[in-house]
Length: 407
Image 1 (cartoon, rainbow, N blue to C red):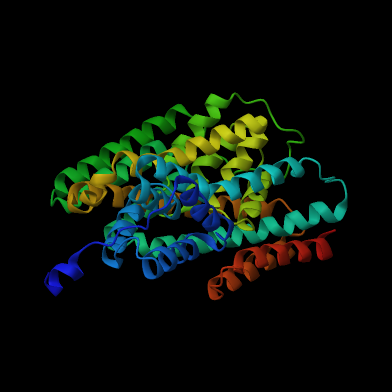
Image 2 (image 1 turned 90 degrees about the horizontal axis):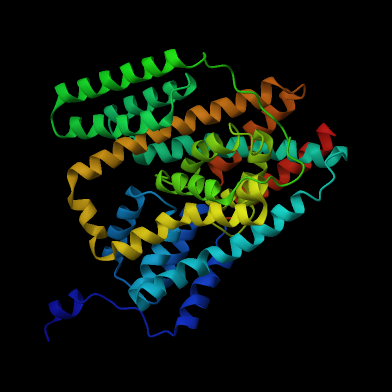
């Protein structure tokens, strides 16, 4: 056998039982602190560099595909690698192992959340400080995601128009497909059709705007739900599925879509929504597990499980159903351009959501100067400190500052 043939052979995962495979990825789930970058680095170090489940070149191509598709990339990688080891059942077990610790911990924290006495001044003050820090994390996510997505001036324009449209009350159901179609036409060198598509989207937005009352500044509702609601689980499953299918470029991109349902339909307030984000930030889990908290607030344990199933279903489905075709996505330039345009529009939505939440929290609170200082301090620390423990440390510190200064 020649050396070329030996080096070109793709590595294969070791022989594992189904129980062994599940426990392997359960361990990843227990150590999944620090967000998607740290989680992917951990998986790559263990399964690519140390155990050689897959070649580095193939892993990098696979990661590129996962970053284009919706869903949490680290979880999708686990499903794909589990399927590579033990077929579709292996993919399911790997995905469940990775998400199970965070899911169980979030269910426990959601249950405990409604047993906290918010009338005690220091408790509410601590959570208010944490909410300001969470806003710092969201603001930081905008340039971090944008640096990977907004790679040319057209994508910048799409992001800017999408963000402005969101501030004016235009539904993301119009902004996202418009962004994808316009950019796909631009990349196909059809500028005339791109202008026509943009004009049609603008006309649709104007017509819809005439049918609706003028937008008002969003009201920041700190905490209005004192007991889990009774929203039917199919609605929460649908809300999770919608967010899961539209989550491009990381868990932060799910924030506008879940907030659209949770806050505007009265399932929870903005303050509780940010509390859920804070809880997910200190857990070993994909950040998107904050959806479990939203589901619990809206519909108790059944609602939490339903929205979690919906939001993770695409992450399972893309690998389980399209396992042999995922890398072909990179070869389809038109589809790639369409998804890039949608992703750019999502960046604009995140920026608009961050602005709305920040304005709502600061404008409606007499302690706005302290909250602004906490937000800016959290933003500065997260911007410079890249360690896996940075997010939980910042959130805990913000809670301590809130309890000390705002009680």
